[in-house]
Image (cartoon, rainbow, N blue to C red; front, top):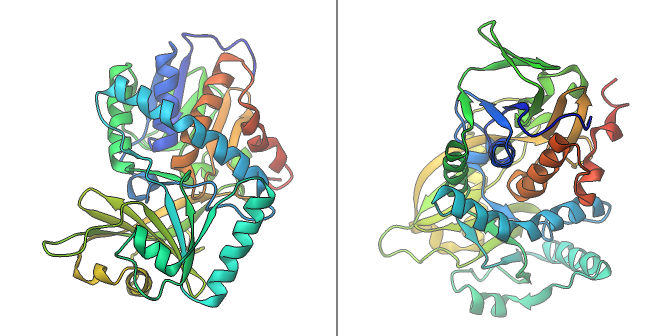
Length: 376
């Protein structure tokens, strides 16, 4: 981005999820006059319904080394990011450093974990292999169907709703102006709203998640919605407590995750290429509950408090888009499953570009220019 953008310039951030709020907070903290445009900041998108895993290692797979490197860099930034946010907002953002277990139910699932462990060992990222008995010593609620797994202490989690609440408070304290109208499109120096009015600005930062692809021609075809259903379960009196750390599972090839909360857990998530279909399906709920009970049978005594749909922002290569797409128009979207994980490094990259500085080295792989041919 041009280096003539200076502290004090007007910045319009489009989108009030974790990425948009983080970028707005850092920009406002650095002296930019920030307007965040979103009809329902913090609560309107995928960030509010997410599981909250910060898991670059257990998300890793051969061929996606750039995704792992970016995620690992952002994870390393998380403790300082959370501490600064706590100080600025006066609220606990809910960072959980207990670690992650990845477990397998059958032989094929165990082989997938073996491939993952070998891949990580080849990258110098050792994880500890555990038997089913060893896993149950760590988490007594795991059922007899769990046959083996991996202990990944470095993969963390965050209470997504506590985080968003803290970010909203920090933005307010730093003077971010909120415009709760809907955005129709953006171009250089202007955000066009559904009511026909505009927000004039010097720089637009598109952080609208799965909806970003429709807001500027340069993003058409680069960002798509990936539907996911997710459940929130509450531990009733007499039920086994939730696990003490995140449990990711493969159940006959189907992924599931159980992320603990103070009074229960978040259970997710299905994944469909279904556009913006917001219905929670009977089949999706059935599959999640069935597989979760295989992993932790005591969940049968929990209460089902919430069943919701979110839309991950998919990209062609599973890397986000972070950079300039037109003069005065930046994008920070396309984070797929990793919006919460990548919020710190993404916000730092956006701030660097607003200042005319060089973004973090790890974020350069997310330059939208790599996908220019796809959008044509």
